[in-house]
Amino acid sequence: MPSNQEVTRVRTPRRENHEVLATVSSLLGSKRVTLQCMDGIVRMGRIPGSKNKKMWIHEGDVVIATPWDIQDSKADVIWKYTRPQVEWLERKGYLK
Image (cartoon, rainbow, N blue to C red; front, side, top):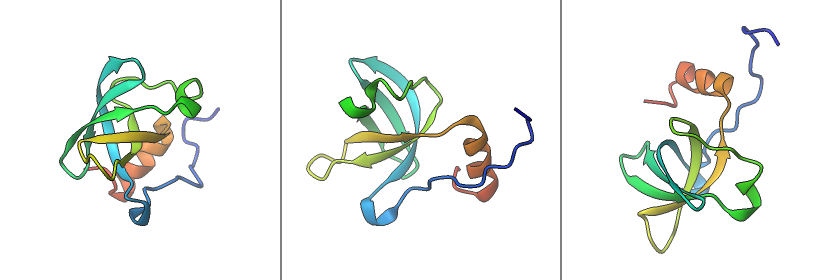
């Protein structure tokens, strides 16, 4: 795998679905994480059962989270970015 590979398609957060970019700040165990969201709110994130085994999440990973409608302090993690995708997001100005 060349290190200078170009990322062609990167999934970006969809505003109409209330998705926000977030960084995993700590792992709480039992499929739960603490998220530092790009809108300035620290949320408790939950990894849904359908993504639990497919997505290995570590501290410092950049993810897409969907805040709950009934409780804004909690969110579901729906997507995890790879390292080249994170670099692309930084170049395009999505990450602050």
